[in-house]
Length: 290
Image 1 (cartoon, rainbow, N blue to C red):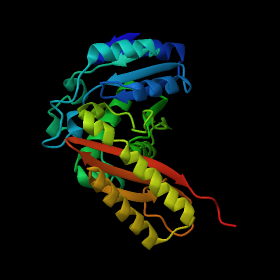
Image 2: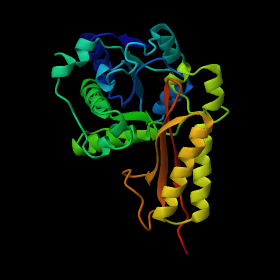
Image 3: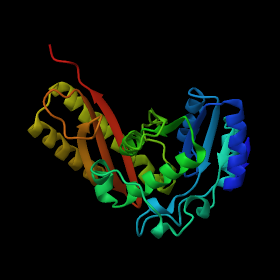
Image 4: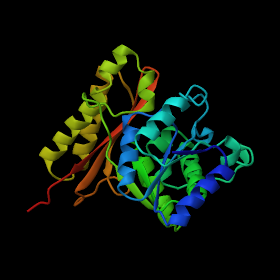
């Protein structure tokens, strides 16, 4: 496994891929890897000849008071895990490789509308930071495909839309969320949870499952019904000790509000548990009416 720590090393390593005509599949991460990340690496192998991963904690996607400074950096463990799962090249850039000028002065890439709702409304500027850094990494790595986990469903859709709008020749692949045995979505930030909070955390996914069951029983769109179960779900989470940010039922394709006839829905939620912000989602596919 090659490790590139600057642009010169990256370009030299990528020349080897290009010389062989290898199809590059890219998996960007912020490190502190867990089994969910490693599953993405394994899945990436299915879509190409060489797997390139990046490890970079992106300051632009963190807001004031968020955990940029304290975000776990675990380089040694990350590199060992990436090597074990067969990654071919790891790019671990310095901030100057990503933002040649100061971060605040750097050109940004923003997806309007979709980037301003749900997590975008709660964390202004967050998705602008995500799409900017991913755009930069795509330009540097020039992959033919890129793999993203669907735990952050909104982020996955934003990257797909950015790629389509900018005409990038990159296939964006979504991979289903990896969960613990109790249903909790794996996340680097789960390490912030206390032992008591960790026992409560699976109730978020459990609540989404309850909502999915209610929707499946209803079997069709009804605005008042959806508003009612969203409200009940919020109450349930508060009863478990969460501070819900949002709980919303949306269309899978564009996160628009479901309308009559829509059959592919996704339930999305974000909630604070102690000092930890958890996100999760659950897709719901209704059966066509007879």
